[in-house]
Image 1 (cartoon, rainbow, N blue to C red):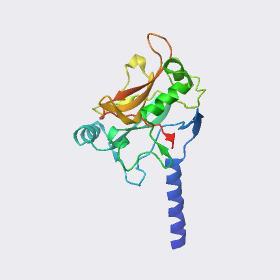
Image 2: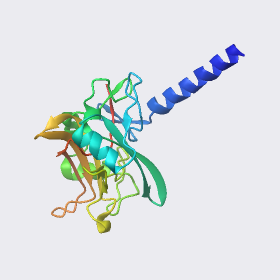
Image 3: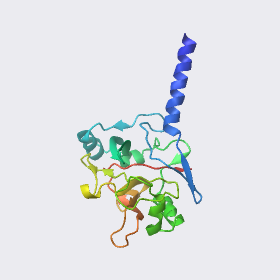
Image 4: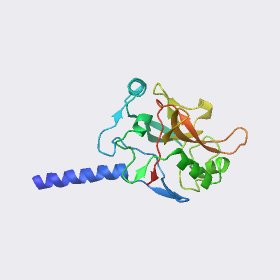
Length: 218
């Protein structure tokens, strides 16, 4: 009986490890990227990441306590419910490590390299965006990156879109280094009003905001 219980525990642990570390990948230039967003609730050492279960909890832990946390929402894209994890900056920089073994959260420089590899700011976006889900200017996803229009969580724990008319026009992911007094980030835009081309650019987000995370191979 003890042997059976041990085997069951091992299977459970292996399944949990696979669920949190097994990601599809794509090679873009000399970089290997996940093709989906990070979706974990533990640091690399096994410690639980604090789960902000509502807006009040997010505001308290992120702005007042400045501790690592994640927020989970179900977002409807193409009439399908997608479970999305958003992490604050303090989770990104925590020394326990947020990315799975063998991966890391990209730096701004690595995102800039990704953009340059795919032709620059006004041409990379189309190749990085998913083929569906966007409000306008669907991507070709020729890079395999499969960037979905997942926006961000604000100071109050609210999911932010530019407006109801412009839902699903922006995808945003954390970078691992500071930039201009905030956390570095990477954004895909449906289009730029001036050029009408999909935009891909590195940017800066506030520490208290919640963003998705995409990892690159070590």
